[in-house]
Image (tube, rainbow, N blue to C red):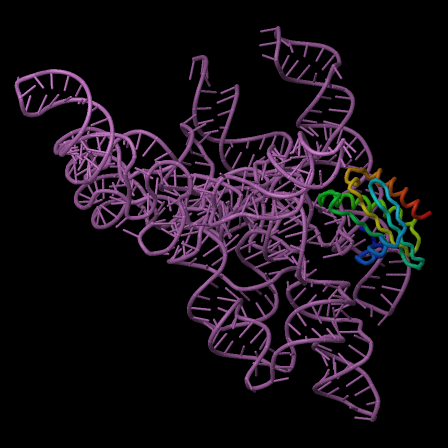
Length: 111
RNA sequence: UGGGCUGGCCGGGCGACCGCGUGAGCCGGGGGUGACCCCGCUCCCGAGGAAGGUCCGGGCUCCACAGGGCAAGGUGGUGGGUAACUCCCACCCGGGGUGACCCGCGGGACAGUGCCACAGAGAACAGACCGCCACUGCCGCCCUCCGGGGCGGGAGCGGCAAGGGUGAAACGGUGGUGCAAGAGACCACCAGCGGCCCGGGCGACCGGGCCGGCUAGGCAAACCCCACCUGGAGCAAGAUCAAGAAGCCGCCCCUCGGGGCGGCGCGCACACGUUCGAGGGCGGCCCGCCCGAGUGUGCGGGUAGAUCGCAGGAGGCGACCGGCAACGGCCGUCGUAGAUGGAUGGUCGCCCACCGGUGACCCGCGAGGGUCCCGGGGACAGAACCCGGCCUACAGGCCAGCCCGUCCG
RNA sequence: GGGCCCCUAGCUCAAUUGGCAGAGCAGGAGACUUUUAAUCUCUUGGUUGUGGGUUCGAGUCCCACGGGGCCUA
């Protein structure tokens, strides 16, 4: 799991990031990034709905995304809040496919 | 050798690297007066048989414990097992199967109420359409010893319930006696019902005998009756600590300025109420008892941080003993998840199941089988306080016992 | 965690002591109209979510599954 300072824990923070942040989508996932220019660590949260699959599938998708995002924490600006939302197609995607789509979306959101 | 029944078990394995979580080590760095905390390093361990559905039962925790009556819910053959159960085992009864074996919410229908459509003559102190029989008239034909007799048809008035037909179900079955025709009207046997007795069994019940009356329908997964059982909530239980704007109350200290500790806990509106007592508790209602000055409802707003609970438990495995068994006793042995936006992910190698090949070779007359090669490829499914069950999902595989058929000896 | 409700024709809904599963819209055919729409007539369409059970008989009663929804902490 991510270090506590990088975790997004409140429902309100999720809502704020999804509504106010810059958005970029792909076949398997959607990325929201709300950039607050404050000197704090970037925080990340994940949303995997029941439409993706049963508990086994949802957990696997969430774990893959978490590990992929952990390797890219350095790219995020200070104080930003990132929410990664999984689409139903993510259930059948491999880790490599999720990684490349995550990179594309992050590039667009950070540009 | 073909088919089947039952019970039990497994449910991918080994390894490498990069990550994640609990715990330990105490090596290195940082912070702190300190207890200790943070980062890094090393090591151990890290999902299931169903972790699932949430259908039952219990442990645990807090609240209540003053009862009585009435309701409510649950269970439902007998005996046992268990902490307990709607679970498990054994047996009984009923049903199914050639059989191993399987299935059953399996108390009560003379306690009462109610329902049994359609069809059918009649459907719950039954009934008479066709039919059968007797009697009284009538009509037709035939015979005649002229007295009448026989056959057929139809009407009236009675008797009957055997046969036909309807239905899920028609008030016992077979044979006889009897009669105008018949009928448990009577008799024998059988089935079934009730009572008594004897024997077996802890018991459900089973076997046998005698007597009675000759026959009693089904539905309680309809209301109901009977017997037995049942306090309320739930780990967001609950405990401790921290934080807490303005405010209120109590106690203590005091240098009379204040300080400390504990408790309550926001705003607005409406309703009811302070001994003529609101409201609350005793699972629901009534009586009764207790607490009692605020309470209830609606709208809007706010908060839920840390630690403990929280992983040794009705625990797993293996001998032995008791028991048909479920299970129990005793001894030995093992140490094995604990997150809190929620730890098991990623990449790869070899092997093992399994699937495909219009691939090669070998065996066989053949169906087919074997070896190698290539490719594919892991069923159902993710702990959240913990156990015991039930139910449901599930690729494939292993073991044991038993039954039926066929062939050979 | 606790509690409750609903699945009937393509859609929206009916169906009372358990006794022949219906209505409206939609669809099809026909009439009217130069044509379309509207209107009128006729008509098709159901394993009552699935599987068992009780009963002579189940949409209805009972049990187990599946799907969907609501309330509450």
